[in-house]
Image 1 (spheres, protein in one colour):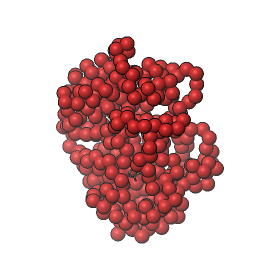
Image 2 (cartoon, rainbow, N blue to C red):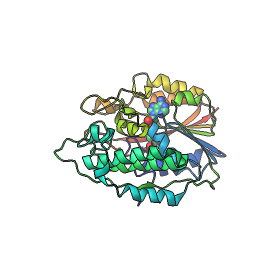
Image 3 (tube, rainbow, N blue to C red):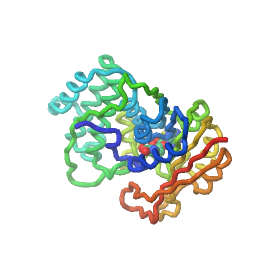
Image 4 (cartoon, rainbow, N blue to C red):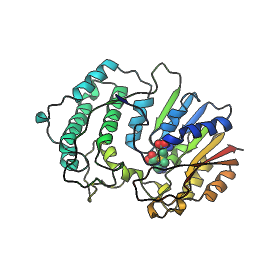
Length: 338
Ligand SMILES: C[S@@+](CC[C@H](N)C(=O)[O-])C[C@H]1O[C@@H](n2cnc3c(N)ncnc32)[C@H](O)[C@@H]1O
């Protein structure tokens, strides 16, 4: 088995909406060659459009997402046999020889079973040790594969805001490789960034810019801190019951000034078409799920830039169980820039 890019649990992932987003873009954005996914998350929207454009810009401010994009879309050559050999070895680790490191010491028996934590420690250290013997593409494939592999067996409801409290945490880790999307012979040009979207927007051009910001006060960097730490491998001090590091990459789009930042982003963009995803959860009973911008705010901001159409779709969103979304609708705004 190998992982496809959409085999990942991620809050706000558009996996199920990709066919609809693609249809709306194909209908509206004519004669376009380049596409920018500026809050790319899992990267599944770019994947869905990979045959529609010649050039792509993929951006997200999380370290783990950058590694995942490099693994799936990065254009370097890689030695398949070598990667397969390493993968086999990662499924035959003699745990008696493994020294517990950051994952076992902090997350063992919590986010992962002790046995799975030891495997993750071993593999993460081994990938780093190999850095001089493998190329950048191989490094990113291995690290992205580790992320997909441990995320599947984590003792959570899908994000790392908390682990599930139970006496025994089941062991289920196996190392599986990701299936890269682009090979070096493919003609698409892909540029991958890890930047604040508002900063990047000032420097880039793409015919179509797709905007899918966070909608609520839930911070992605706080939800996916375990993935970020294992990616960076900087072993920071952790705090509280959920074992989180000091906050970083805190998004303004999840705070009260979201609209100011959205207006700034839209006014900076140099593009022909702007496509924005949002939903109507601003009436949600759960405070943390409430939208930060209203649909009217978005429509008004976009209309200043050009003629704006709105598309609706009923949708059942990913949520961890508590939040009731009545009459939940997904929206797409399409602006033809003046
Ligand atoms: C709604 S999710 C995108 C989901 C994505 N379209 C998908 O289908 O997987 C929003 C993303 O924006 C990122 N993000 C939040 N604030 C950001 C900022 N200021 N600059 C860049 N990325 C940001 C988050 O890390 C998160 O991955």
